[in-house]
Length: 180
Ligand code: 5GP
Image 1 (tube, helix red, strand yellow):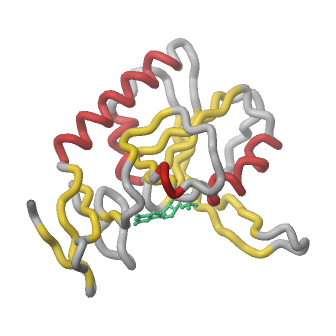
Image 2 (cartoon, rainbow, N blue to C red; image 1 turned 30 degrees about the vertical axis):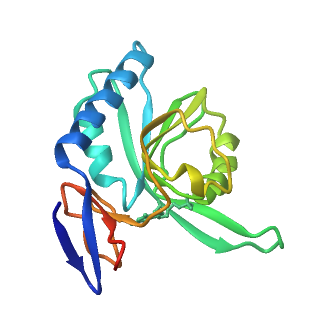
């Protein structure tokens, strides 16, 4: 096991680069099969998903498009809580087969708040792909169609995921050390 330090915390290897790559290939194979003859639009949620989305996309053999968006949360005028705006969503989703690409789904809140906006644009179909899912942390249940790894509710970094800006460049995924 390798231990790394980012800022004030230590992290231990959790998923090796090889295991991640095998899973990415497996997920891409499922997508290639499910979207045969279609031209899906992948929407990758920045920042964390950039590495997963790039690797996944490399293994797609179907015709596919990709765009990258950032979700920004702000308090709406109503008391209904946070509104999510999508920065960079310049594609018309009407009639498209849309696939959302996430690095990690934790409580599900971010996507849950964003989904009404997507549905509003009336895509032909809509699916969610996430590399990591903290299933036990779910507060807002989501229809997640493709999950790489179900992981415990512990903080992870690497492979696009950061701890206060650091760790995104790591090829492996690390978990916060028990004694950190
Ligand atoms: P949710 O809205 O599902 O609760 O959280 C989603 C976002 O929280 C993710 O896109 C990610 O930015 C962040 N997040 C949740 N868990 C982790 C984690 O273990 N590590 C890191 N680096 N970010 C996380």
